[in-house]
Image 1 (cartoon, rainbow, N blue to C red):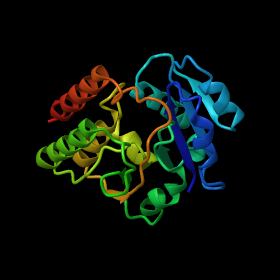
Image 2: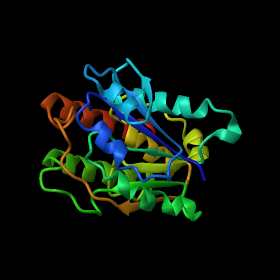
Image 3: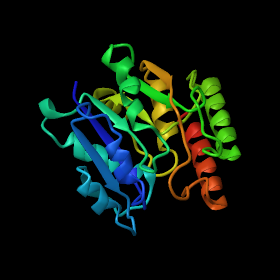
Image 4: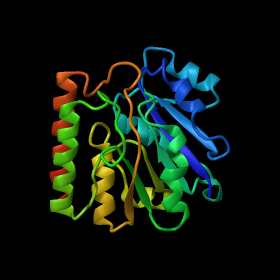
Length: 229
């Protein structure tokens, strides 16, 4: 199966090359880094490290992911990837765990796999208390309202290309991850989780690192959950 990776990146000049180096050699066909209106050298560094670099000037995590998907889906159908992996560019995820992440799909057991930080090992300080609570609240609501049994809204995830196209992703900002999970549940896709490690990111978080980012992300996640009832 062909695997493509999409990495949304905003001002990740210090971390992006290291993330790209840690993706297992030979596993992935193309790594697409979407430079999400960065003001630093993120795109230049990623290109030098061998990634395909796109520029998305509209700010927003979802905007970046959608741009990466549009690039992946622009290939002729026989050349499109079988699996799309999403990964953050701040070095908080462990790219070397990608084989474990995609394994349930390769075995034909799942359509989507979430890398769960709640089930795995978290470095001290890698997630703020508000992030841990927010994940618990969101996944509890997903279970109660949609019958979706997730423990995390983790950004490190893999999904079959056909499943991703069926979902019809639309969110352009903070609601991206929860939208994918709740729509996958509504479509009765085969979803599972694998434990993944998580570490302190390089640089300052654009979401949990500010009060405005935390409140904005929390509101958007809750709004998205109730929007699709």
